[in-house]
Amino acid sequence: MRAASALLPTHGSREMHDKLKTVARFAALVLLITAMSSAADTKRILVHGHRGARAMRPENTIPAYEYAINAGADVLEMDMAVTKDNVIVMSHDPILHPPVCSGPAPSAVIHESTLAQVRQWDCGAVRNPNFPKQQPIPGTRMPTLDEVLSLSTQGTFEYNIETKSFADQPQYTPSPEEFVRLFLEQVHKHHIEKRVMLQSFDFRTLIAARKMAPEIRRVALTEADPRDFVTIAKEGGDAQIISPNYNLVTKAKVDAAHKAGLQVVPWTANTPADWDKLIDARVDAIISDDPAALLEYLKTRGLH
Image (cartoon, rainbow, N blue to C red; front, side):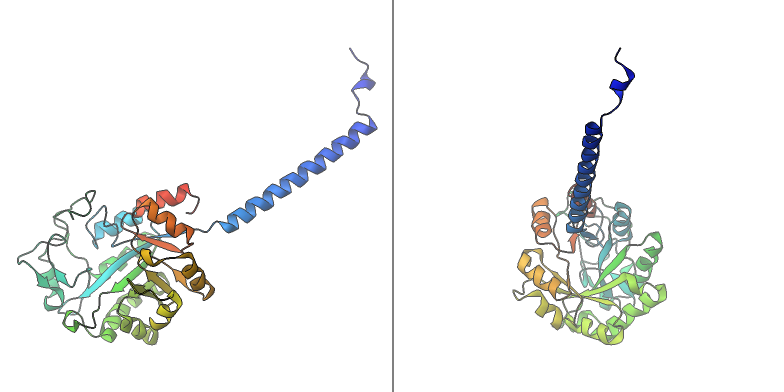
């Protein structure tokens, strides 16, 4: 056994101990700063469920929207049409037809049909052949905007809602102003102005919305326009968000849009290769037919 005095630290060892503690504190501080910088650099990307979750449930139906909500989607993306009796219903196409909807006739124009007539069509009986994982739900009827906005109580998700309006085919919809008025009527009824975005390829509806309800965020959709995103958004009623076909996205265009204060939300990307391209371009959100798969992928990248 050593003497007790041998167990006591000498002056030199105490000095070394203090130095080591200082170095350790400095290293911890460097690690913390690095982690904070990395976190600030990592940008959370939001997920929009395209037509709810078209890859998994019949598009633009309550089951599709609820699937997206339960998966944790940040935004429900959807489309509007207007019936003969001025009820907004959720449909990408202005004409009812298989396989999306099956009914008493080969096809029917929604704007020439009453809500009661539209409800004769089953919009969940047949699987869309483009989406083999889609689960048919026979008996599913086309929902109204009122019914869809009623889902807002199920979470804090937002809505990205498109006016399917056609300048070259005015017979399919009311005027842009009337379309927007009907839309705003339902938004105000449910008091969710801050949770709604209005999107369109028909910029007449975005211009009308800017005049009638400037507080509602506007989304300029574009499919093949090669111009910069800032110019397109300006023409789209001074839209705050640009939503291009994902093939149009480049980092340079996204950077320029961000510099102008715009958000970039491309559509419709469904594969990891396409998601990676958009992640690298630093987009703000991605619209996908399979929001659950996209969410899972983003989480593995630390981006959601």
